[in-house]
Image (tube, rainbow, N blue to C red; front, top):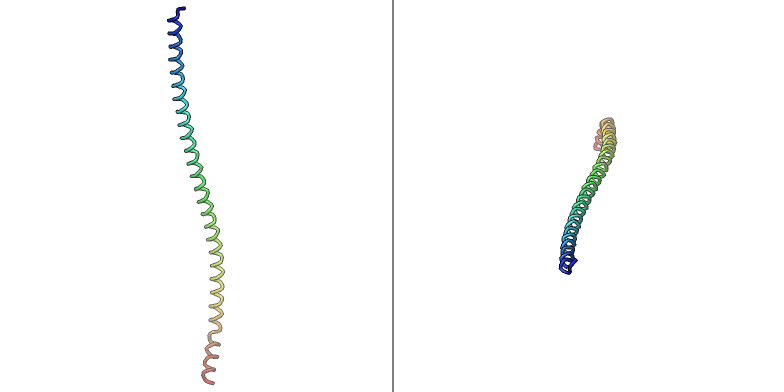
Length: 104
């Protein structure tokens, strides 16, 4: 093999190596872009799921609080009814006591 053939072979090998390196850099860049996009999607999905879970917790707590408030209100309504009924039964006696007080 002549010197010119050896030099041409070296140049061809260098050109091939440069093309292989450029291709590898493009592939690495593509892999990095896909990985970043995948990571962004994973973060977005995680954030969305966390928000949905938090909203569910809030809704559950609100429902439990409403249930307890309804129970307390029902008890209060019973007490008010009892007071009103007792007042009805004692009204005539109270009127007599007040009128007697004015007469005296």
